[in-house]
Image 1 (cartoon, rainbow, N blue to C red):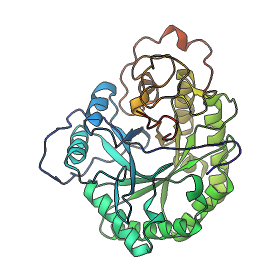
Image 2 (tube, one colour):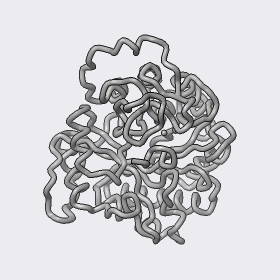
Image 3 (tube, one colour):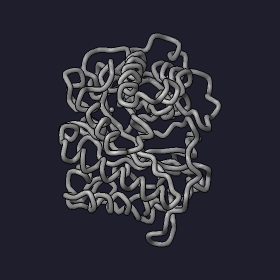
Image 4 (spheres, rainbow, N blue to C red):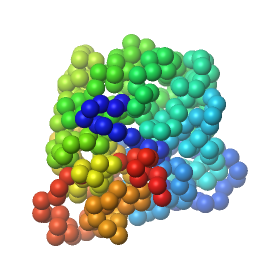
Amino acid sequence: MLSPLRLAPTLAPIALTAGTLLATASPAHAAAVPGPGFPAHYTAPYLETWRSAEKLTELHRATGLTYFTLAFVISNGSCHGAFDGTIPVDDKGWQSAVNGLRAAGGDVITSFGGGNGRELALVCDSVETLKAEYRRVVDSLNLTRIDFDIEGGSLDNTEANQRRNQALAELQREYAAAGRRLAVHYTLPVNPDGLSPNAVTLLENARDQGVDVGVVNIMTMDYGPDFDMGKTATTAAEGLHRQMSGIWPAKGAKELWGMQGNTPMIGVNDHANEVFSLADAATLAGFAADKGIQLIAYWSTTRDKACPAHGVTAANCSGTPQNPHDFSRILNRTRPHRPSAAPHWLSSHCTSWMARTCGWRTG
């Protein structure tokens, strides 16, 4: 979705790289083993799947993060999904990496869509073929959670949104009948006061089709004007909470907070005037703990280090002064490492400043 405030929001393909025991060698197309599942509150940042699967192992070892969101499964040009549109979801490297992370007590969410790739509902022309392709991806990776990053023009494609929601509702019912649960997340662009009308319409359609939406995850980034990015992440969440109470009026306030996710772009956003600083990360972490928000994610794990120069948007670093993995330490709620001494500049005022077009995939 492109609203006046967001100007050019894009959540580019992302996948993760973390794993303590992620073996690098495995039989070709090894089956993914079942995972241990997810706690009530967790951190699962994005990892770009066009990077080496070994990144998952590296990041798990370096940060202690145990949950990741793999981005993105998109069309390979037909009604067939692949990581970044080119890498099979049963790729032996990624299967091995996921198995290793699960052996270490972690798990993955796989995200479909993103800012530039074609989500499968835009390509598959029937509910049955779409459902079958979603099932193939879920079964290949033994997933219990899948995410749909729907933004830009895709938000206004009512036929695709209807087809996706109908396929997901049927798939959830079929898995439930077989004794399995499949959680569905929607990741959506947001304004400082909540979702735009087309995003609300998508969620209302999901509800009407019978989708059990587990998380509404907002991309708290790339608004355009100058904002205090930590504070704006919280006002957007408060606005979303009010909207969710209208979409699901039978759910109480605590349950609705427990259905939220919040995903900033760490460091310099695509608009260089917007900077999500370490102080902003601390603001979001405190707010999420206070409200009981289910998911914290961020774009992206591979950017969690300083660039050679500050104030730049880059694919592989944050553009802000930091030590390696500082954002992970602040935002990790599941198995946090004991943080090192805070840099002297963290206590000072940090000006607040994610995406495939402008830095998420430029390196």
